[in-house]
Every structure is written in structure tokens, then in C-alpha cells.
Image (cartoon, rainbow, N blue to C red; front, side, top):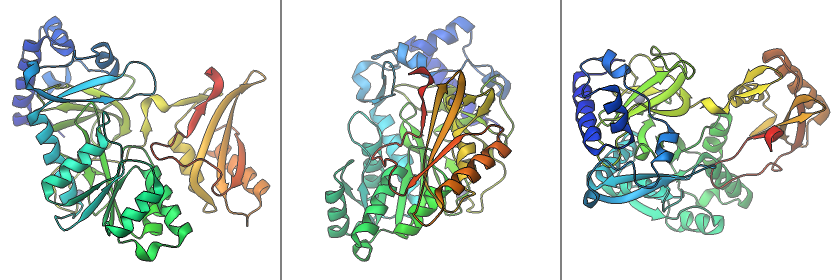
Length: 411
Ligand code: ZN
């Protein structure tokens, strides 16, 4: 994929805006003596921006327009350190809703649908993004926000909700609860728009089967509008990204070099028309690839593959680099374990140890299963973990993002 002439012109408009605002990136450009890009090669020489730049700009240092043009801020929480504040102009808010409405259209959602929005509202971009896109489409929104599962299920039945908007963890929790209560006959869900965390095929299939719905994966991050900058289509082969708003590159996370289509690396995003806080070559730390070729659905928007991890999720165990995704793929070979797992890494007697907790039902031999999984990890990755098998439902479910990896070596 190459940057188009139109996109280059859009980048130049952004460069001008950033230089004038003299925000952190404007300063970077001025220091590098860059005032425009003429080609793809020029573009690839532009400096990256990082989460740390955004933190350093706290609270409003990212603002690239006069303050009277800013109508809203959002903030990405981040588990550690200073939060990041992203200012939005009225046009940014509208552009985001346009992109989100496009996502719903790609998922075949119409103004006849009723959408139950369970992601959080407030500083977080999720809830309000799901809502604004749906309103733009003319659909009916049931703005629940997270939690209160009893009320969620009550509204889902009474309002005959047809679309569930949720994180994958919460969708799973609701699916399990619906089964447990035996109320699936009273549920009218047809589709799920699921976003904001990495999840495996197994979990996806469980939610699909237990709720009997189609599932669409939505992509986005607060720094770049929020969720809604791309979505999977009915063919379930990656997520189409709205590249008239956001330009995607995949880079080698170690060298920063741009990788050819098809190769896995870190997603880097450039906002093409954002006003309040434009970002150029922002490193997301999400690992994916650009899927080469055109999609069967006919859409010309480029596709990225499912997010396979975070470049900062890489664990080093006994000298071996491991991504959680690799463990997940091994667990997927065992149909008797559920989609939930936990990885705990500790340092015992001078050695790194990985413990993997998996769930299964009571009909299998726990000791045998534990041994089989440990052997498989040894065979595929090269070290032997301790595998602890527990009863189905023992591992925690979350209303937000499930934390699956705990590195206790540095706690
Ligand atoms: Zn498609």
C-alpha cells in the first residue's frame, strides 16, 4: 500500500497546522526543518509520535487549534502514569460519528435496529462514540454504559435489543449469564459490535454460538478519535480502515522501518483531517499486518488483520521471547479448555517461571490435561510452564478488559 497524492496533500495541511500551533509535533518538525512532504519516501522520514509525547503534553499541549474551537476532550486512562488528553473540534466529533456510522453500515446495521451500548461513557471515548454513530444512522440507542448485568438483561429483553455493543469480555459475561438464566428465548440479538481488546478465535466462537449472533470487530484508540476508525465485514477477514480519515502503516517495532503489506509488525497511524489534536505517525504498539489484495466484499478500504498483541506485551522467559498470542494459539489446540486463561510469571529460586491457568469442565483428567499442555508449550516455544487446570468459571470475568498476563517478577 502506498500513500496517495490526496493523502500526501492532507498530510501537508496537517504539517502546516502543527507548525503554526507549535505543539510537541510542530516543534519536532521545526527542529527537523520539515515543512512539507512531496513523496511516500518523504513521508516515511517524518518522525514518529509516541504515547510519552502525549503524556508530556498534559493537559492541553496537544491542542493544535485556538481554544474557542475545542468543544470536547477525551482522555485515555492508561494503567500507569499521567493520562493523555485529546481535544476535539466540532468537526472532529462529527468526523468520528461519520466513521462510526460507516462501521455500522458495513455490519449491515440500519435505522430499524436497537443498539444496547455497554462500554463506558465519560472521559473514555467508547460509549459516546458507539452512541453518536448510531444516532447518525438513525438507529435507536439504549445507552446503558457498563455493569449492572441484571438491568442490562432486563432492558435487552424489554427493548428487544438487536445489536450488542460491548467489549469481548463483557459480551462473554452476558452470554454466559443468558445461558445460566435460560432466557435465550427472550433475547432478540442479531449482531454484536465488539471492540477495544485483543481476543482469540475461541472466545469469538463462544460468544457467537452462545448468543447466536454475527460478530463484527471494531478498531480504534482514544488518541485517534476512539473506536470506529475501522471494522470487520461479513467475510471476517480483517478490519477495513477508513483511510480517508486515517492512514495506516506497519513498521518493524525494533528498527522503525516500514514493512511491506502482509508482514506482521506495529500499527502506526496518521490522522489525515483531524483538527483538535492531529497525530502524525503515531505508534500504537498494536501488532497486526496489512492484508494484501482486495476483500471479497468489494470495499476498497484497506484491511488490517486481527490485533495479535501489543509490542510491549512481549514476555522474556528463560531467554525466550514469548507473546501471549502464542500461548493462546496452543490452548486453542485443546477443545476441552475454555476461552479464559491467565498467565503469571514469577521469579522463583533464581529462575523465571510461567504458570498458565486454564479452565475446563469436570469430565476431563486435570493432571493429564496439565501435562499435555505443558508438553505442547515446550514443543512449540521451548520452555516448560507450570499448567494449573481449574473448574470452568473460576477465572475472573471482567466488565471491561480482561487482564490475562501478570508479571510478578517486578512487583
Ligand atoms: Zn470486506
